[in-house]
Length: 230
Length: 335
Image (tube, rainbow over all chains, first blue to last red; front, side, top):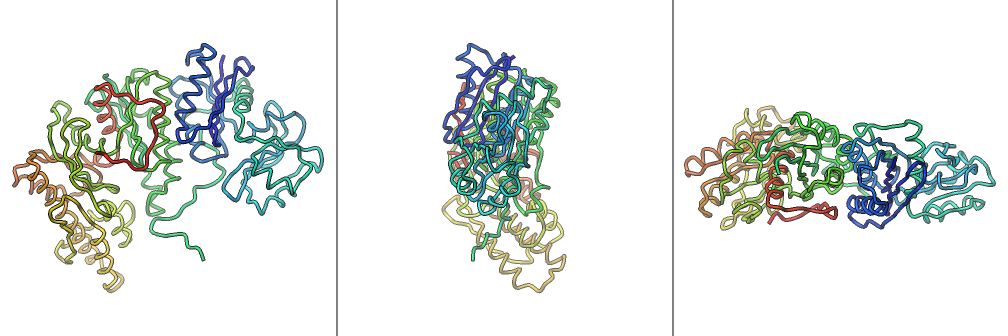
């Protein structure tokens, strides 16, 4: 009973493998241009290292976002197609859940990931096998972070945070008491662990239904018009 | 190599097709034209998101219509260049994951190579005639290509500015006829006089190149000088006169190139090849010149995965393979 986890919402391609609830291995590689190829290379490497064939995989979990639009699409597309072609169970995990689940349990946790140049994806969660949301997921502009924290912070003291260096740089002055864990990308082992628990609980998504969790509409510049700046 | 799956997501059509050798067993195209019409053109990020949603259902429909399970597929052909990168990577990720899951080979296909083969989808028994001349006319391309053999292409001419289909889209937008512009102009032109307005033709003598931006500007200037609102007859006359200017250039330059290269078969492919005036006039001109002309039916003029599968089938049959490192490219020359 192996579950394969895929993570590609930031600038690292991550793959992890779980067997009977136990993490067998996880790899992260800087993907440069070729994200889809590197996800498959990493999967192949991980399977080979454990002497497994692709038929050993029974389920695939994927980080459905939010995150980099292109990475998100590629990761979800690969997960859906593997599920479709190999008749695997498919489970979606949010980037927030994947991050929160690797933090110490029982402490309110702020997950803060890079969005656009001027914004972060943020959510408060309580780390558990399936992290419990303490606020709505949101994309918040840098200048609005202070107000967002005001409204959502579950406790002034004793909270922790996990996120990117830029997120820490923006949030630490606003909330100095947070204990930080820095990451470059959501951990694939987090996707694997939440995915495993969901899968064991009988949760499934059809490869014909799964869509990435973009949290942002596409920005649209109608053809023939140019965005004007004063 | 018998059963090949084709995947095409280079712009705003999500498409999958199943071929058995050269025979098309299914060809499914989910067009996003309605979605993009509200913006007056293709929005790349919206197109890419649609591909992610539709790819697996379209793939399954193609298999169902062909009446075979996925496990029977022996090879995959996927468009990996040129096009909208965000859109291409979706089809490419799907193709690579299928190749991984089924442990079968895949090849990346140049989108224009697919169009070159689109003229031969409906006659699978007929050997592909070499050399022949292909005129690719679409929203992104206007090219004359001499096809010497499989994978052996010589670019004779191309547009120096706008593609023919792009000119159709821009004039349609100017006249507020909606998106996509080609079919709209074709319909209006049927009720208009092609000689009502005298628009310029860029012949670029001594070359096989094209230019349509001057024509587009001439239409703009003419419209600016006309009293508003334009009457329906004026609109029809503008469409007919503009269309005639494009068609005349395309027809004459294609026939001249075929004669200069001494080829007896001309294919006209791409979305603009579905234009009724172009079809009528190029058939007439080729008949007079003793050139055989092949134009795919409209479903194979516009983007589709069947043409990608056919181009890929020939490559796979020659033993060509790509690996997981194959990347998507926004622009890439055919030859």
